[in-house]
Length: 114
Image (cartoon, rainbow, N blue to C red):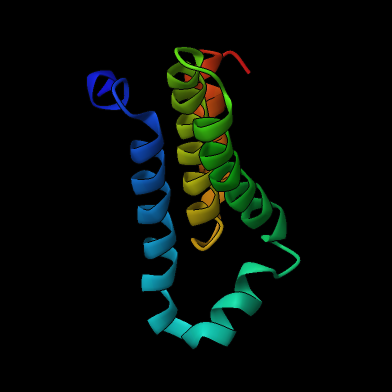
């Protein structure tokens, strides 16, 4: 994975972020573009949507602005944030999805001691 990013992190960041944008656009057939936008910015999931889009913008920005060789590490960190934001955003569409996901993360991170 890292060996694919290291030579040209800019291209990898563009392709990864473009894939996430296509995934969002692909779900527009469920409610249509206007309905999708209304649901994305609904009061219960606007935060997840905002963080998801900001993480995509940060990935592209970091890929082109951080100097070599630090851009590889920075892009990998942004990709991790982008992936986590995508999972949280997707869980917002599943009834009780974020609650279950938060419980799983809590149990994994604290070994069930919480």
